[in-house]
Structures are given as C-alpha cells and as structure tokens.
Image (cartoon, one colour):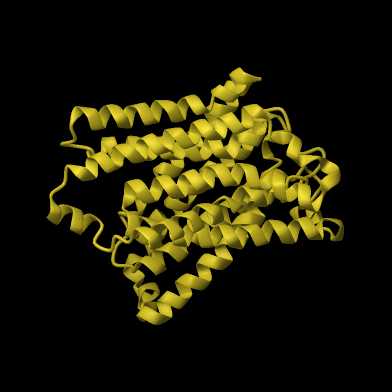
Length: 343
C-alpha cells in the first residue's frame, strides 16, 4: 500500500514539474496577467472540483464550514495566505542567488519546515493532541536525507555555473546579492512550507464517511483560496502599475491563452490532488503520512531536474557535474523510502 501511495504522489510531482511547459505557449500577455488567470484554475476551479469529490451523496461542501470548525478554517486560510507570499518571493531568491543555490535553499527550507512546523504549531494550539509525537526519529532522518539530496543537486548547479564564462555568469545572475538572496530564499522556503501547516490545521475538515484518499481535499481548497488572495492582490497591483489591463481585452488570444492557463493550472493542482490520494494509502498520523509533504517537495526537485536534462539545460557539463546531479536525484528518491525502512 505504501508503494501505491508513493507512486501517486510521484505522478502528482511529475505533473507539477511539467506545469510550466504550457505557460510557454501563452502569447502576448504580461506575467501578471497569465499568472492571475492560471491561478484562477490552479487555486480555485480545480481545488473546488477536487473538494467536491470528498462530499458524499446527500451532503454539500458548505456543510463542512461550521462554527465548530471556524478556528481551523481561519488558520487554514491564513497559512494559505502566507504560502502565497512564499510563491511570490521564490522567484526573487533565484534572481539574487541563481537557480541552483536559490532553489536549493528555498525548497530545502520548504521541505524541512513544512514538515516540522505543522506538528509544532498544532501542539501549541491543541496540546491535548500530542502532535509532537509525529516527529519520530524516522521522520527527522527522512527530512535530513531530503536536505542532503537537495544540497547535492544545488552543488551540481554550482558546478555547472562554474563552467560559464564571466559574461555568462553575469547574464545568468546579474543581480547577485548573497545576503539579500539568503534572506529572501529562507523567507520563501518558510512561507512555502506554510502550505503543509495549513493542511495540518484543516486535517479534520472532512466528512466522516468520505473516502480517505479525498479527506485532505477540502483543506487543500482552503489553503489555495488563501494563496489566491495573496497572488491575485499582487497581480492586480502589477496590472495597475504596468498598465497591462489591455491584456484581458485581446479577444483573439482568449482561446489559446485561457486553454494553456487551464492546462497549467490542472497540472499544478495535480501535485496536491496526488498528495491527498497518496496519503490515503498511508497510516494516518504515521511516519509516511507525516513525511508526505516533504516527499512531494523532494520529488518536485527530482522531476524539475529531469525536465532540465530533457530540455538539455545540462548540455555541455562535464562528467563530474552530471554524476553529482544524478547522485542528488538518487538521494532524493531514496529519501522517500528510508523512513519506511527505519520503522
């Protein structure tokens, strides 16, 4: 059963890592315009559709949003808002540090803190739930192995950068600023990890007779609503600042751009749809369940780099760099199985 759950999460991670491919097909829209439109699909349309799968016959989704659950609902949306900030600052970390270092620090922080913060904050809010018991030795080792794998891939990225000429380096990271970049990368990772914290607060927001594989989908909807609030506010601000409102009036582009935004949104949402389904095959509250978010982040890094290989982004690198990259990918894949072996 564990292998099935991991396979489903892996499929979701692959879809997420592929979600930026359709965006390249969007024509003559500014970043803020296509980001807002794909966000409507990724953070509203498909999460609503997913959450409806968790509603048994004879019930409605709104029945879950009760006064008794008001605190958990508010906290789930709140951490979704914080996660939205993480998404916006993620790109800045790569602007100031470069892709390899920025991505490694941000995703490493996200994977680690996203796994650990949930039980810590739940323990503060509900000490009677003994949430800290989830942070077993196997969980800590799993997080540590993930961090090692991401660090090795980051090293491979640094080795690749070292082969570039000074002109190419300047073009790749022209705004390099280590102190500012480290601060932003840590902030991006911390905020992005809030997605899993939101899921922890929303873990009981589901129907008792809902299939286990769909239990996390209502909470996922609440988190993505929070993220949409943050991103929509920023995109609309940029529309106004850059005077890019005219993008939405280009009717000849609607069919193409909305279609590819929808595809990108569906692929992006697949990671958390897969996360919910995959966790349904794990023991509730067990090691694999606790580490599921960390595993998802690790596999996102794996498939992102696989896409990099397919798209020949690593072309021209020496053998040592490729070996380091492959070693990092292998470590990340192993991180999904090591905790189970330690149980």
